[in-house]
Length: 96
Image 1: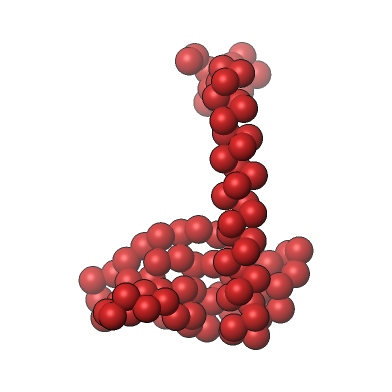
Image 2: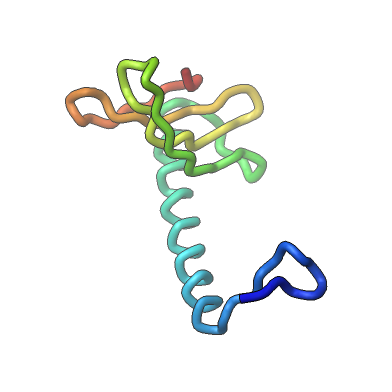
């Protein structure tokens, strides 16, 4: 694809790709919201429309565990879900 005339750094997609991206976006958004609801309940974070929900996989060689998903950021802190050495999921608030 080539850049569009209106935005030189933007690329148009075919109708098929448009449809696929729409479906994937809806599925991912709903799954992320589901995880955010669990995290908010577990950590006590108030989940509002302004709260940030993001999927940001990362790991650090300086930690003894991997931060798998930073998920919910409220006005004062972010909660992260991680997997411990035994493979169990746990929440951390605030994120390390």
